[in-house]
Length: 56
Image (cartoon, rainbow, N blue to C red; front, side, top):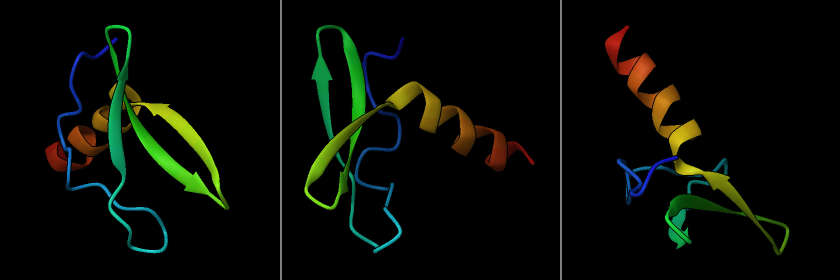
């Protein structure tokens, strides 16, 4: 569980819109606007993918 989104302001959706972030309790989430439905994706999941890509 991540308390902050490591890449806040740097993560985009497929339409090149910056993902918003929020916290629910102690956990950080990126918010994906899916045709008006706000999907909350745990920041840790997205941050781990980005970090693994940066590490090569």
